[in-house]
Length: 428
Image 1 (cartoon, rainbow, N blue to C red):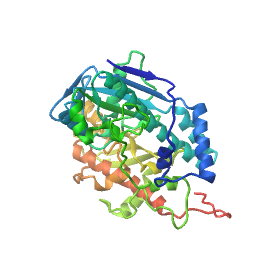
Image 2: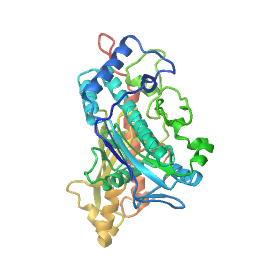
Image 3: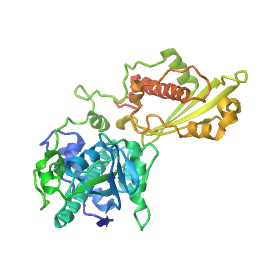
Image 4: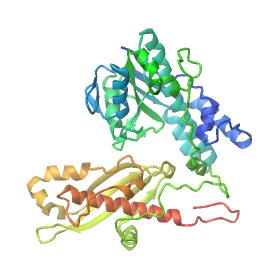
Protein backbone atom coordinates (compact mmCIF):
# COMPACT_ATOMS: atom_id res chain seq x y z
CA UNK A 1 0.00 0.00 0.00
CA UNK A 2 1.63 3.22 -1.16
CA UNK A 3 1.22 6.48 0.78
CA UNK A 4 2.99 9.74 -0.11
CA UNK A 5 2.93 12.97 1.88
CA UNK A 6 5.26 15.78 0.83
CA UNK A 7 4.93 19.11 2.60
CA UNK A 8 7.56 21.01 0.61
CA UNK A 9 7.92 19.39 -2.83
CA UNK A 10 10.28 21.12 -5.23
CA UNK A 11 8.20 23.13 -7.71
CA UNK A 12 9.64 23.82 -11.14
CA UNK A 13 6.80 25.00 -13.38
CA UNK A 14 7.75 24.76 -17.04
CA UNK A 15 7.70 28.19 -18.65
CA UNK A 16 5.73 26.84 -21.62
CA UNK A 17 2.93 25.68 -19.29
CA UNK A 18 2.85 29.04 -17.48
CA UNK A 19 2.76 30.95 -20.78
CA UNK A 20 -0.09 28.74 -21.98
CA UNK A 21 -2.13 29.41 -18.84
CA UNK A 22 -1.46 33.13 -19.18
CA UNK A 23 -3.38 32.94 -22.45
CA UNK A 24 -0.58 33.36 -24.96
CA UNK A 25 -0.40 31.27 -28.16
CA UNK A 26 1.99 28.28 -28.40
CA UNK A 27 5.64 29.29 -28.77
CA UNK A 28 5.11 32.80 -27.39
CA UNK A 29 8.17 34.35 -25.73
CA UNK A 30 7.51 36.68 -22.81
CA UNK A 31 9.24 40.05 -22.83
CA UNK A 32 9.17 43.50 -21.23
CA UNK A 33 6.51 43.96 -18.56
CA UNK A 34 5.04 40.44 -18.97
CA UNK A 35 8.47 38.85 -18.46
CA UNK A 36 9.07 41.05 -15.41
CA UNK A 37 5.76 40.02 -13.85
CA UNK A 38 6.21 36.32 -14.64
CA UNK A 39 9.71 36.34 -13.14
CA UNK A 40 8.47 38.17 -10.05
CA UNK A 41 5.55 35.72 -9.53
CA UNK A 42 7.88 32.72 -9.79
CA UNK A 43 10.40 34.26 -7.36
CA UNK A 44 7.70 35.28 -4.87
CA UNK A 45 6.27 31.77 -4.78
CA UNK A 46 9.70 30.16 -4.47
CA UNK A 47 10.24 32.19 -1.29
CA UNK A 48 6.77 32.18 0.24
CA UNK A 49 4.78 29.30 -1.29
CA UNK A 50 3.91 26.22 0.75
CA UNK A 51 2.92 23.49 -1.76
CA UNK A 52 1.98 19.98 -0.67
CA UNK A 53 1.15 16.56 -2.15
CA UNK A 54 -0.75 13.68 -0.58
CA UNK A 55 -1.52 10.30 -2.16
CA UNK A 56 -2.51 6.91 -0.83
CA UNK A 57 -3.72 3.66 -2.27
CA UNK A 58 -7.42 3.05 -1.70
CA UNK A 59 -8.24 0.37 0.85
CA UNK A 60 -11.28 -0.74 -1.17
CA UNK A 61 -12.12 -0.40 -4.87
CA UNK A 62 -15.26 -1.76 -6.46
CA UNK A 63 -16.72 -1.06 -9.90
CA UNK A 64 -20.46 -1.41 -10.25
CA UNK A 65 -22.76 -1.00 -13.21
CA UNK A 66 -23.15 2.75 -12.79
CA UNK A 67 -20.64 3.86 -10.15
CA UNK A 68 -17.21 3.33 -8.62
CA UNK A 69 -16.90 2.66 -4.89
CA UNK A 70 -13.71 3.86 -3.19
CA UNK A 71 -13.32 2.95 0.48
CA UNK A 72 -17.08 2.48 0.70
CA UNK A 73 -18.02 5.82 -0.91
CA UNK A 74 -19.79 5.80 -4.28
CA UNK A 75 -18.71 8.04 -7.19
CA UNK A 76 -20.33 8.52 -10.59
CA UNK A 77 -17.33 9.23 -12.83
CA UNK A 78 -18.03 7.89 -16.31
CA UNK A 79 -14.34 8.06 -17.16
CA UNK A 80 -13.30 5.96 -14.17
CA UNK A 81 -15.90 3.38 -15.15
CA UNK A 82 -14.60 3.24 -18.72
CA UNK A 83 -11.02 2.93 -17.45
CA UNK A 84 -12.03 0.04 -15.25
CA UNK A 85 -13.67 -1.79 -18.12
CA UNK A 86 -11.12 -1.05 -20.85
CA UNK A 87 -7.95 -1.48 -18.80
CA UNK A 88 -9.27 -3.93 -16.18
CA UNK A 89 -8.40 -1.53 -13.35
CA UNK A 90 -8.31 -3.36 -10.05
CA UNK A 91 -7.35 -0.57 -7.64
CA UNK A 92 -6.94 3.19 -7.33
CA UNK A 93 -4.86 5.87 -5.66
CA UNK A 94 -6.58 8.95 -4.24
CA UNK A 95 -4.58 12.15 -4.49
CA UNK A 96 -4.84 15.71 -3.18
CA UNK A 97 -2.48 18.57 -4.00
CA UNK A 98 -2.42 22.22 -3.05
CA UNK A 99 -0.38 25.33 -3.79
CA UNK A 100 -1.05 26.57 -0.25
CA UNK A 101 -3.08 29.58 0.90
CA UNK A 102 -0.16 32.03 0.86
CA UNK A 103 -0.34 32.70 -2.88
CA UNK A 104 -4.07 33.42 -2.83
CA UNK A 105 -3.71 35.69 0.19
CA UNK A 106 -0.94 37.67 -1.51
CA UNK A 107 -2.88 37.89 -4.77
CA UNK A 108 -5.90 39.31 -2.95
CA UNK A 109 -3.68 41.80 -1.13
CA UNK A 110 -2.26 42.95 -4.47
CA UNK A 111 -5.78 43.37 -5.83
CA UNK A 112 -6.87 45.44 -2.84
CA UNK A 113 -3.73 47.58 -3.25
CA UNK A 114 -4.69 48.38 -6.84
CA UNK A 115 -2.14 46.08 -8.53
CA UNK A 116 -4.25 43.99 -10.94
CA UNK A 117 -1.28 42.86 -13.03
CA UNK A 118 0.50 41.34 -10.02
CA UNK A 119 -2.79 39.78 -8.93
CA UNK A 120 -3.31 38.18 -12.34
CA UNK A 121 0.20 36.77 -12.74
CA UNK A 122 0.16 35.31 -9.22
CA UNK A 123 -3.29 33.76 -9.71
CA UNK A 124 -2.25 32.12 -12.96
CA UNK A 125 1.03 30.93 -11.46
CA UNK A 126 -1.00 29.26 -8.71
CA UNK A 127 -2.94 27.34 -11.37
CA UNK A 128 0.33 26.34 -13.01
CA UNK A 129 1.65 25.10 -9.65
CA UNK A 130 -1.42 22.89 -9.15
CA UNK A 131 -1.00 21.39 -12.62
CA UNK A 132 2.67 20.77 -11.87
CA UNK A 133 1.90 19.14 -8.51
CA UNK A 134 -0.63 16.70 -9.94
CA UNK A 135 1.88 15.89 -12.67
CA UNK A 136 4.55 15.26 -10.02
CA UNK A 137 2.15 13.03 -8.11
CA UNK A 138 1.49 11.01 -11.26
CA UNK A 139 5.25 10.66 -11.89
CA UNK A 140 5.79 9.41 -8.32
CA UNK A 141 3.04 6.85 -8.81
CA UNK A 142 4.45 5.72 -12.15
CA UNK A 143 7.86 5.16 -10.55
CA UNK A 144 6.31 3.04 -7.81
CA UNK A 145 3.97 1.17 -10.17
CA UNK A 146 6.80 0.25 -12.53
CA UNK A 147 8.47 -1.72 -9.74
CA UNK A 148 5.17 -3.40 -8.90
CA UNK A 149 4.50 -4.33 -12.55
CA UNK A 150 1.46 -2.10 -12.58
CA UNK A 151 0.32 0.68 -14.89
CA UNK A 152 -1.14 4.00 -13.71
CA UNK A 153 -4.12 5.34 -15.65
CA UNK A 154 -4.77 9.04 -16.38
CA UNK A 155 -6.28 10.81 -13.39
CA UNK A 156 -9.86 12.02 -13.12
CA UNK A 157 -11.29 14.70 -10.82
CA UNK A 158 -14.71 15.97 -9.79
CA UNK A 159 -15.65 18.79 -12.13
CA UNK A 160 -14.02 17.11 -15.14
CA UNK A 161 -16.35 15.89 -17.92
CA UNK A 162 -18.58 13.00 -16.78
CA UNK A 163 -17.88 13.61 -13.08
CA UNK A 164 -20.08 16.08 -11.22
CA UNK A 165 -18.26 18.58 -9.05
CA UNK A 166 -20.85 17.99 -6.32
CA UNK A 167 -18.97 14.79 -5.38
CA UNK A 168 -15.84 16.76 -4.47
CA UNK A 169 -16.86 17.00 -0.81
CA UNK A 170 -17.39 13.23 -0.68
CA UNK A 171 -14.01 12.53 -2.27
CA UNK A 172 -12.20 14.79 0.20
CA UNK A 173 -13.95 13.06 3.11
CA UNK A 174 -12.85 9.70 1.68
CA UNK A 175 -9.23 10.86 1.40
CA UNK A 176 -9.23 12.29 4.93
CA UNK A 177 -10.85 9.18 6.38
CA UNK A 178 -7.74 7.14 5.57
CA UNK A 179 -5.27 9.62 7.11
CA UNK A 180 -4.00 8.90 10.58
CA UNK A 181 -2.38 12.35 10.68
CA UNK A 182 -5.72 14.16 10.44
CA UNK A 183 -7.47 16.14 7.70
CA UNK A 184 -5.59 17.82 4.87
CA UNK A 185 -5.33 21.65 4.71
CA UNK A 186 -8.15 22.01 2.19
CA UNK A 187 -11.90 22.41 2.59
CA UNK A 188 -14.67 21.44 0.15
CA UNK A 189 -17.78 23.60 0.18
CA UNK A 190 -21.21 22.10 -0.42
CA UNK A 191 -21.05 23.39 -4.00
CA UNK A 192 -17.91 21.32 -4.61
CA UNK A 193 -15.56 24.30 -4.82
CA UNK A 194 -12.30 23.95 -2.88
CA UNK A 195 -10.75 26.38 -0.42
CA UNK A 196 -7.94 27.25 -0.95
CA UNK A 197 -9.05 27.24 -4.58
CA UNK A 198 -5.55 26.42 -5.86
CA UNK A 199 -6.05 22.79 -4.86
CA UNK A 200 -7.06 19.62 -6.69
CA UNK A 201 -8.45 16.20 -5.76
CA UNK A 202 -7.95 13.28 -8.12
CA UNK A 203 -8.18 9.53 -8.56
CA UNK A 204 -5.61 7.48 -10.52
CA UNK A 205 -6.69 3.99 -11.56
CA UNK A 206 -4.26 1.05 -11.32
CA UNK A 207 -4.14 -2.04 -13.51
CA UNK A 208 -1.96 -5.12 -13.87
CA UNK A 209 -2.80 -5.28 -17.58
CA UNK A 210 0.13 -3.15 -18.74
CA UNK A 211 0.02 -4.55 -22.27
CA UNK A 212 -3.63 -3.59 -22.60
CA UNK A 213 -2.85 -0.01 -21.55
CA UNK A 214 -0.13 0.24 -24.21
CA UNK A 215 -2.63 -0.81 -26.89
CA UNK A 216 -5.29 1.67 -25.82
CA UNK A 217 -3.89 5.13 -26.56
CA UNK A 218 -6.63 6.92 -24.61
CA UNK A 219 -5.41 5.16 -21.48
CA UNK A 220 -1.70 5.95 -21.79
CA UNK A 221 -1.07 8.47 -18.99
CA UNK A 222 2.18 9.65 -20.58
CA UNK A 223 0.29 11.40 -23.38
CA UNK A 224 -1.50 13.50 -20.74
CA UNK A 225 1.57 14.08 -18.53
CA UNK A 226 3.84 17.12 -18.94
CA UNK A 227 6.64 15.71 -16.74
CA UNK A 228 9.06 15.48 -19.66
CA UNK A 229 12.10 14.25 -17.70
CA UNK A 230 10.31 11.17 -16.32
CA UNK A 231 12.42 8.04 -16.86
CA UNK A 232 9.30 5.91 -17.09
CA UNK A 233 7.81 7.78 -20.08
CA UNK A 234 6.32 5.38 -22.64
CA UNK A 235 4.85 7.89 -25.09
CA UNK A 236 5.36 11.57 -25.97
CA UNK A 237 3.24 14.24 -24.30
CA UNK A 238 0.34 15.46 -26.43
CA UNK A 239 -1.73 18.34 -25.09
CA UNK A 240 -4.92 18.99 -27.00
CA UNK A 241 -4.49 22.51 -28.39
CA UNK A 242 -7.05 25.03 -27.24
CA UNK A 243 -7.63 28.69 -27.86
CA UNK A 244 -6.35 31.10 -25.25
CA UNK A 245 -9.02 31.91 -22.69
CA UNK A 246 -10.25 35.41 -23.53
CA UNK A 247 -11.40 35.90 -19.97
CA UNK A 248 -7.75 35.72 -18.85
CA UNK A 249 -6.97 38.65 -21.13
CA UNK A 250 -9.85 40.58 -19.62
CA UNK A 251 -8.48 39.86 -16.13
CA UNK A 252 -5.11 41.19 -17.21
CA UNK A 253 -6.74 44.51 -18.00
CA UNK A 254 -6.19 44.54 -21.76
CA UNK A 255 -8.39 46.87 -23.78
CA UNK A 256 -8.66 48.26 -27.29
CA UNK A 257 -9.98 47.00 -30.61
CA UNK A 258 -8.35 43.58 -30.21
CA UNK A 259 -9.61 42.99 -26.67
CA UNK A 260 -11.74 39.83 -26.29
CA UNK A 261 -15.48 40.32 -25.98
CA UNK A 262 -16.66 37.12 -24.28
CA UNK A 263 -18.69 37.77 -21.15
CA UNK A 264 -19.65 35.37 -18.36
CA UNK A 265 -23.39 36.17 -18.75
CA UNK A 266 -25.68 36.07 -21.76
CA UNK A 267 -26.72 39.71 -22.18
CA UNK A 268 -29.45 38.71 -24.67
CA UNK A 269 -30.99 36.25 -22.22
CA UNK A 270 -34.55 34.98 -22.57
CA UNK A 271 -36.02 34.72 -19.08
CA UNK A 272 -39.07 32.78 -17.90
CA UNK A 273 -40.67 36.00 -16.62
CA UNK A 274 -40.86 39.45 -18.17
CA UNK A 275 -38.18 42.09 -17.72
CA UNK A 276 -40.55 44.42 -15.88
CA UNK A 277 -40.99 41.90 -13.05
CA UNK A 278 -37.26 41.18 -12.93
CA UNK A 279 -36.50 44.90 -12.74
CA UNK A 280 -39.02 45.37 -9.93
CA UNK A 281 -37.61 42.41 -7.96
CA UNK A 282 -34.05 43.62 -8.50
CA UNK A 283 -34.90 47.04 -7.09
CA UNK A 284 -37.14 45.91 -4.25
CA UNK A 285 -36.18 42.41 -3.18
CA UNK A 286 -32.54 41.79 -4.10
CA UNK A 287 -29.34 42.87 -2.35
CA UNK A 288 -25.99 42.29 -4.08
CA UNK A 289 -22.57 42.72 -2.48
CA UNK A 290 -19.32 42.19 -4.42
CA UNK A 291 -16.31 41.47 -2.18
CA UNK A 292 -12.67 42.35 -2.77
CA UNK A 293 -11.88 38.85 -4.10
CA UNK A 294 -14.70 39.10 -6.66
CA UNK A 295 -17.08 36.78 -4.78
CA UNK A 296 -20.69 37.99 -4.96
CA UNK A 297 -23.14 37.64 -2.05
CA UNK A 298 -26.84 37.92 -2.91
CA UNK A 299 -29.92 37.96 -0.67
CA UNK A 300 -33.39 37.74 -2.20
CA UNK A 301 -36.57 38.24 -0.15
CA UNK A 302 -39.48 36.13 -1.45
CA UNK A 303 -42.97 37.23 -0.45
CA UNK A 304 -45.93 34.92 -0.97
CA UNK A 305 -48.91 33.31 0.69
CA UNK A 306 -49.86 29.84 1.81
CA UNK A 307 -52.27 27.88 -0.36
CA UNK A 308 -54.50 27.04 2.63
CA UNK A 309 -55.48 28.59 5.99
CA UNK A 310 -56.94 31.65 4.24
CA UNK A 311 -53.71 32.52 2.46
CA UNK A 312 -51.36 33.48 5.28
CA UNK A 313 -48.53 35.80 4.19
CA UNK A 314 -45.05 34.31 4.34
CA UNK A 315 -41.52 35.52 3.62
CA UNK A 316 -38.37 33.54 2.85
CA UNK A 317 -34.79 34.74 2.41
CA UNK A 318 -32.59 33.19 -0.28
CA UNK A 319 -28.84 33.47 0.30
CA UNK A 320 -26.64 32.83 -2.75
CA UNK A 321 -22.85 33.08 -3.03
CA UNK A 322 -21.29 33.29 -6.49
CA UNK A 323 -17.67 32.91 -7.49
CA UNK A 324 -15.83 35.74 -9.27
CA UNK A 325 -16.86 37.09 -12.64
CA UNK A 326 -13.74 35.77 -14.35
CA UNK A 327 -14.73 32.23 -13.28
CA UNK A 328 -18.19 32.61 -14.83
CA UNK A 329 -20.06 33.39 -11.57
CA UNK A 330 -20.15 29.73 -10.37
CA UNK A 331 -22.84 29.04 -7.76
CA UNK A 332 -20.83 28.30 -4.59
CA UNK A 333 -23.40 28.36 -1.78
CA UNK A 334 -27.20 28.42 -1.56
CA UNK A 335 -29.54 28.57 1.40
CA UNK A 336 -33.25 29.23 1.81
CA UNK A 337 -34.85 29.94 5.18
CA UNK A 338 -37.83 31.79 6.64
CA UNK A 339 -37.19 35.51 6.99
CA UNK A 340 -36.57 36.75 10.54
CA UNK A 341 -39.89 37.04 12.35
CA UNK A 342 -41.89 35.15 9.71
CA UNK A 343 -44.58 32.89 11.08
CA UNK A 344 -46.59 32.36 7.91
CA UNK A 345 -44.54 29.30 6.97
CA UNK A 346 -45.90 27.55 10.07
CA UNK A 347 -49.34 27.55 8.43
CA UNK A 348 -48.31 25.62 5.30
CA UNK A 349 -50.22 22.35 5.13
CA UNK A 350 -47.09 20.18 4.89
CA UNK A 351 -45.55 22.02 7.85
CA UNK A 352 -48.54 21.07 9.97
CA UNK A 353 -48.02 17.35 9.25
CA UNK A 354 -44.24 17.01 8.78
CA UNK A 355 -42.48 20.21 9.78
CA UNK A 356 -38.99 18.74 10.31
CA UNK A 357 -38.75 16.99 6.93
CA UNK A 358 -40.24 19.97 5.06
CA UNK A 359 -37.87 22.51 6.60
CA UNK A 360 -34.88 20.19 6.03
CA UNK A 361 -35.84 19.88 2.35
CA UNK A 362 -36.12 23.65 2.01
CA UNK A 363 -32.78 24.18 3.75
CA UNK A 364 -30.80 21.50 1.90
CA UNK A 365 -31.87 22.06 -1.70
CA UNK A 366 -29.04 23.59 -3.78
CA UNK A 367 -30.05 23.68 -7.44
CA UNK A 368 -27.27 24.14 -10.02
CA UNK A 369 -24.61 24.08 -7.28
CA UNK A 370 -21.14 24.38 -8.76
CA UNK A 371 -22.43 25.41 -12.18
CA UNK A 372 -22.14 28.87 -13.76
CA UNK A 373 -25.04 31.23 -13.14
CA UNK A 374 -25.69 31.38 -16.89
CA UNK A 375 -26.96 27.77 -16.72
CA UNK A 376 -30.19 28.98 -15.12
CA UNK A 377 -31.25 30.11 -18.61
CA UNK A 378 -31.35 26.51 -19.85
CA UNK A 379 -32.41 24.83 -16.61
CA UNK A 380 -35.54 22.72 -17.34
CA UNK A 381 -38.11 23.08 -14.59
CA UNK A 382 -41.88 22.98 -14.35
CA UNK A 383 -43.83 26.20 -13.93
CA UNK A 384 -45.70 26.47 -10.64
CA UNK A 385 -48.03 29.15 -9.37
CA UNK A 386 -48.00 27.81 -5.83
CA UNK A 387 -47.05 30.38 -3.20
CA UNK A 388 -46.16 27.79 -0.56
CA UNK A 389 -43.17 25.46 -0.22
CA UNK A 390 -44.91 22.13 0.32
CA UNK A 391 -44.08 20.53 -3.04
CA UNK A 392 -40.65 20.20 -4.73
CA UNK A 393 -41.98 21.73 -7.98
CA UNK A 394 -43.01 24.89 -6.15
CA UNK A 395 -39.63 25.21 -4.44
CA UNK A 396 -37.75 24.63 -7.70
CA UNK A 397 -39.87 27.25 -9.44
CA UNK A 398 -39.00 29.82 -6.78
CA UNK A 399 -35.29 29.00 -6.97
CA UNK A 400 -35.49 29.59 -10.70
CA UNK A 401 -37.02 33.03 -10.15
CA UNK A 402 -34.34 33.91 -7.60
CA UNK A 403 -31.44 32.87 -9.82
CA UNK A 404 -32.94 34.57 -12.86
CA UNK A 405 -33.32 37.80 -10.90
CA UNK A 406 -29.66 37.64 -9.83
CA UNK A 407 -28.67 36.93 -13.43
CA UNK A 408 -30.74 39.88 -14.63
CA UNK A 409 -29.22 42.23 -12.04
CA UNK A 410 -25.65 41.25 -12.90
CA UNK A 411 -26.37 41.44 -16.62
CA UNK A 412 -27.63 44.99 -16.15
CA UNK A 413 -24.34 45.83 -14.46
CA UNK A 414 -22.51 44.35 -17.45
CA UNK A 415 -24.47 46.61 -19.79
CA UNK A 416 -23.68 49.79 -17.87
CA UNK A 417 -20.80 51.78 -19.36
CA UNK A 418 -17.89 52.11 -16.96
CA UNK A 419 -17.13 55.49 -15.47
CA UNK A 420 -13.87 56.95 -16.77
CA UNK A 421 -11.63 59.45 -14.97
CA UNK A 422 -9.74 62.36 -16.52
CA UNK A 423 -6.88 60.07 -17.59
CA UNK A 424 -9.20 57.67 -19.38
CA UNK A 425 -8.97 54.96 -16.70
CA UNK A 426 -12.08 52.96 -15.76
CA UNK A 427 -13.19 53.61 -12.20
CA UNK A 428 -16.17 51.26 -12.01
